[in-house]
Length: 175
Image (cartoon, helix red, strand yellow):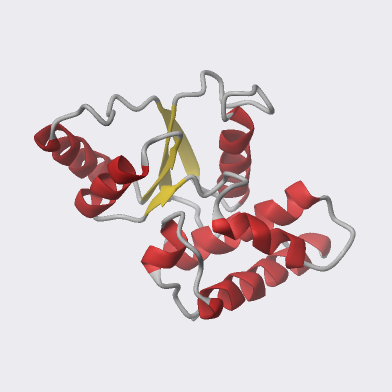
């Protein structure tokens, strides 16, 4: 069994504690070695992840957050998860009861939720109510975990290293 991460440190866009960074890097390195050996497993098979994102089509590099969404989807699907793209109906102007109802429903439908392009306070409110891990732009290059990818060894592309870090976070917070 793998040690777990401090949920708040990794889920939020706040700096990551050194202990959590070390755990993510260790797991990302293990995933990197497994991929190099052709031994990719599907430990998230049967898990459902929600991707709250305004980007129209979750494709590569559409300039509207789509590349972040595509990176998140690729990382999760490669581990066996099903990812549903949901256009958020919540905004900073949503009432607290609307946020609570929506977050609770999402928490019943999904094992974790990635929020992209949403206000941090709104993501926090969803996280309080959902009862599942809620990530605040985990696949964004501005998320603190993005810097960890540069610490992975090897000649892999930075995007691939970033995918291993995302997968490490997903496995450490969901599996």
